[in-house]
Image (cartoon, rainbow, N blue to C red; front, side, top):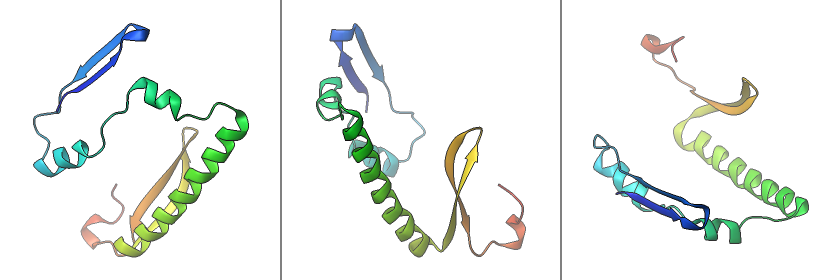
Length: 104
């Protein structure tokens, strides 16, 4: 499943092949989320600070709902932490088998 993104207006073009060792399930999942063109991204991106703030709040609200559902579905704890200045979510099962305690 190559990604034939053509950004010729910028003098850019790329083809990225799907890694051969991906499972069929992952290939199927990836095919459901095509990469939009540069023009599509520009057309759908906020252009003012107020629009960016609104977009960020919308995405954060959606993420909070997803995290809550994930906690329930997979019985995990989700902790917001910072690693080298990057905010990430640390996901830990609530019940950890003794063979995996203290391991990443």
